Each structure stands twice: as C-alpha cells, then as structure tokens.
Image 1 (cartoon, helix red, strand yellow):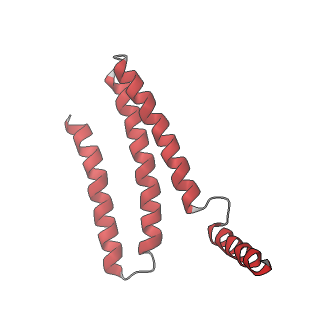
Image 2 (cartoon, one colour; image 1 turned 45 degrees about the vertical axis):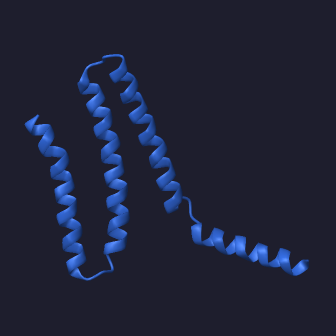
Image 3 (cartoon, one colour; image 1 turned 180 degrees about the vertical axis):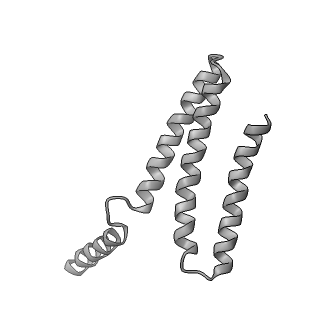
Length: 108
C-alpha cells in the first residue's frame, strides 16, 4: 500500500517537472485555441448579422495569423537542431503558407 502511493507520487512529480514552466506547450496550445475560437465566433456572429465583410475577414485573418505564428515557432523548435535541408524545407513551407494567405487577399 505504501509502495503504491510512493510510486504514484513519483510519477506525478516527474510528469509535472516535464510539463513545468509557466508557458508549457500544452498551455500555449490550449489558450491559442481558446483565443482563436473567440475570434472565429465573433466573426461568425458578425457575418450572420450581415456586418461588412471587412470586419469578418479581419477577425479571421487575425485568428489565422495567431495559429500560424504559434505553429511556426513550434516547428522551428523541431527543425533547429536538424541538418540544413530541414531548415530550407521549413522556410520554403513557411513562405508558401504566407503567400497562400497574402496573394488571395491582394488578388481578391
């Protein structure tokens, strides 16, 4: 009985030390999803109320930018210790994603 409580304490302390820190990956991901959800919900309500599409597009653009920034930071953490070919692939993908967002806005 004492051994089981001791092992569960060591497991919980080791998992909390892995997740530790004020801004852990899980916490950043969760609060980013919450913020993006709020922005998309407001954009949805505005669109349903026939508010100008500029406001709706701006809110959706902000939400998309937030997600891309968080994901690109996390991807850079993964790519940073890898060989140069991974870094080139990272920047090529990032440029294509940015172009995929900006070009339709300029054309449309």
